[in-house]
Image 1: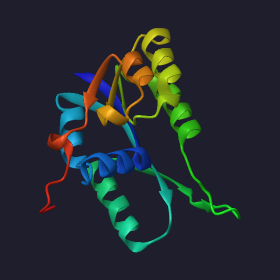
Image 2 (image 1 turned 135 degrees about the horizontal axis):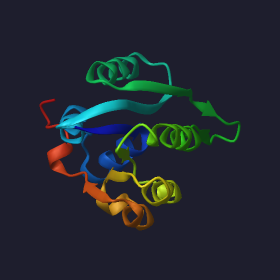
Image 3 (image 1 turned 135 degrees about the vertical axis):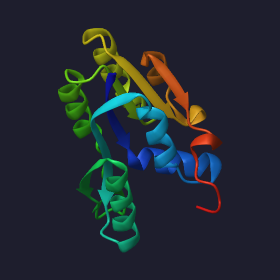
Length: 161
């Protein structure tokens, strides 16, 4: 059985699925697809912590599925802009776990990860699967993946969920 490590950029998947489809990503369907006939070495979901109750409930759902949830505080700057991304944290964890898995799964459309995907795919000779909303995923990231999985209606929550 192949070993898999999963890394989910929660903010990226939230905004891209909402913008494109007006719906939420279905983490249960994704988990089933990404882990089917595979041994999960580690699964991280990286999120920004705003401290509200609905968000805490969502984080508990992710934990129940099998994710370790990593939180970073939401930072509101004095100029009104906000900061809170996990790019460096995701990169460090992916490099650390690449040696313990056969397959690395990244859920993000962020082109900043293209060099990382290449480093793991070519340098560490691992399979890199990327999940992202096709029209909002950087072509450079798609090109560096071993396989790209387009997030579409099959991986979205139905209106009743």
